Image (cartoon, rainbow, N blue to C red):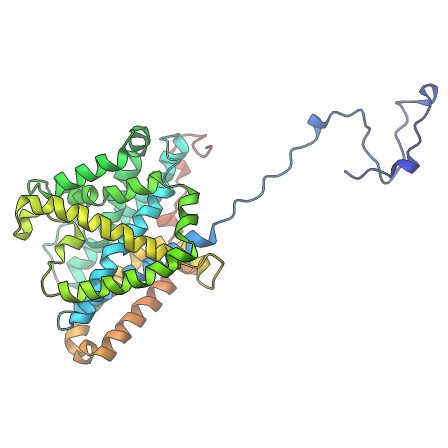
Amino acid sequence: MFHAPKVFQRAPLPSATRESEPRRTMTATASPTVPVANKPPAAAPAKQRDAYFDNVKYLAIVLVAVAHAWEPVMDDSRTVRALYMVAYTFHMPAFIIVSGYFSRSFDMSAAKVKRLVTGVVVPYVVFETAYSLFKRYADDSPDHPISLLDPWYLTWFLVALFIWRITTPLWQTLRHPLPVALVIAMLASLSPTISNDLDLQRVLQFLPFFVLGLQLKPEHFQLVRRREVRMLAIPLFAGAVLFAYWAAPRMQLGWFYRSNSAQEMGAAWWVGAVMTLAMFGCAVLLTIGFLAWVPRRRMWFTALGAGTICGYLLHGFLIKGAEYAGVFDTYEWLLTPGGRVLVSLVAASAVTLLCTPPVRRVLRPVTEPEMNWAFRQGTNKT
């Protein structure tokens, strides 16, 4: 409220004060005797998204899509295989770490559980069914099962995110959660008896990255964005590419997928534990290097970070559809260096379009449904 300058507010004598006569001034309409508590509360400012993390999510999902697009064209190229290995070392760990960071406040409250169901469970049911039907009919595989217990292709991440998030209160309670998660991941890597149900091998072997994200604080991200870290990231990635080029014909890709035990890949049981720690260390280092070079300011692609779930869930139809249609067998020039560059650009452009607001609006009934009819009143309150 605006008040008239004091020079015009001469205090009246007590005998001249009359509560029945309102003050007829344009600049001071409220009586000074009205308690401040009676004023209506000011509207809370809308929470703004952090441009840095939206940039992280968008760039990570582009790497995911491009790496998936390399799979059909990398067999005869040691260079592409090496780049694929570097990308697979950190792109999903980076995405999972950020997911863990934003899951720190999950406390099993009604509102959080509702959001978990509508934002994770519903998309999983819809897209697991859609991908299974797509495989059955587009690939002429009538025997391909439709099972919500056995995630196929990309949908494993939604199952994993559900399991990780509902266990967040446990990890927030433990005194040393990251060592415990690493031990669980190591045990999973040497346990071939773990079934395919809910893709538990991946869930358990990727668990340490989610737990690491839960332990991070804003100041940790400030540290990785320092100039010294950016400079160190350059030789780090150069060394990673050179090592991957050497390891490309020697190393199984299964270590990057984390979907099998060591024995299932023909290695001794103890190798699983060693590789779990080694891959975790490499992934964390490359993730730090990646995070250090992500722009902090708003970019042309920043707004697309809000739609990465759409890009993630939809780009698989394009890549698998191209495989089922025999595109990579029909057009052999795609296996040339120029063809591989084109495949990379098309994949990056496609996933970019799939993250745009129009696509997000169209998919909102599936990826962000309200579903108020399914929940009790009051579950929207945090």
